[in-house]
Image (cartoon, rainbow, N blue to C red):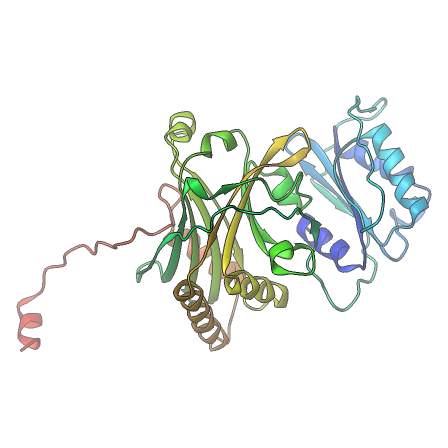
Length: 377
């Protein structure tokens, strides 16, 4: 069974891909709309031609269709017009040079379709190219008047098997948002709070990034004016190493509304070539930029504001050293398993507390036995 992320990855792997993310009232309504596409062969289980990927997924508010790939202008227009009529298009990613498509808000047509019990339906995938490429989104170049150097620290927890480099972006590092609307993964689009690091289209790191995008639905404006902590976490777990990226903002306004600070995270697995490429590019930059997005007038991930700081050489060198050591640790484990590593991480980082470590770790005092004192002489 394919996941939404796998569908998005296969779409992004095609050169100059197009992708649509569309909401429907139910899974049957979504399937009925997909069957109306002229290139879908419903007699063979909704088979698709080569170069087109599609998945139907049950969501908390109905169903989501993800469709895209190497689409011709004719196919792209057919998908757009049909889904405009029968569904609600949440986001569109278009190849460079293709004129934008104007999404119109209108009532979804679902006459004669009943709610079904199907949790997930995916179409037979076509054969993707051998080389997977990161998805790219068109960004904006914004200048900052005065370079700002952040505070930072290196810390570790033996119990949690982690070393962290924590960088704090001050409120005065605020800049305009990097994007008008971020077109990204299914998780980023549907989640309330989420974080991702992504490349944008461009020829230089200043335009291409990667940049950190943090989604903060319902609280994004409450984060303005408060320091933002970005933790680069290097976990040495029993079944492998995991790189985690955390974005945390301890805003009193957010605490008053939801009872806890804003916190979002995402992980990268060193066995994945694309993950390694992105982490190395992120920690190799001399700037760190975070763009906060939330549902708004431009889409489900409308850009609201950003923060950018200059990273001193000692910070980038520390990040590179920690990453290199994590890779060495990871490669020395023969039975590597991503899911088992995540399970261990979740056990050692309970949801009731923050995984971002403080500057100083207080180790509980443990009384020694009398023979332990003797051993120290």
